[in-house]
Image (cartoon, rainbow, N blue to C red; front, top):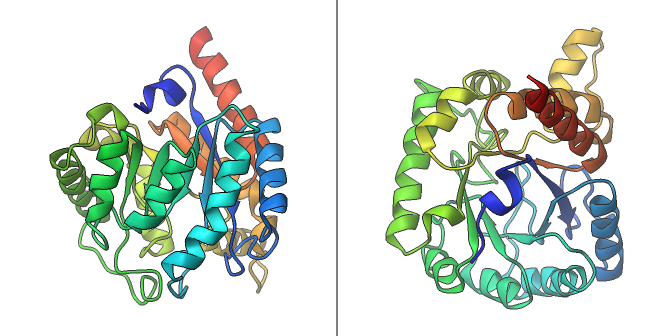
Length: 283
């Protein structure tokens, strides 16, 4: 059985992103072949990633769904290749039960589900049967529409309510408590103000959900907008020039209760996590 304590109890977990997609917002098309994706995964681990998250369907704003067979074709060879070459747990980023099952059969240990089981509830049974890890994430709407004027009365309370409810559903489906993690879904159906409020009130959210919290701010658009405001420029820096801003949010998240961060640049996050851990030990 996978447990989050194994990868985040004593030291924060750093989840490296392996996108096997043509249209992801940051690195779409760079690792489309299985060999390229496996090589990238190995590099992330060498840079300090303690988990890898393999995705075959983009969840960027406006992204369109991918057929199940195509998603399986993209992710399964990569997972098989990584499991044979790296000594860290591998996760599959999917909402589909058949893709999750194929990935777990190929050696993945975690399912990272941006829909929290709402799109395809049978995914919860797949995870429970395989005794895998499961990440419940909050998203308002779905990728094609999630950034069309997202609104909340109290974003922290509403995201917390959602995560608590979906965690309860996951437990009811038989997923073990120690295998559950929660993700507030930075950038998924949220404005820059919503994202900042969630990060600012992260301690309260962590206390509320009662399971390890994963935060994924990496290269998100709100960071580009904030950087443009600070620099006084008219254009936002492209995603691959947002790693400094990502690192600031990673340090903040880890210092305010997050136990896992999901990033494109594993080296900076891993070094920051190590230094924070050392400072806490010395305090």
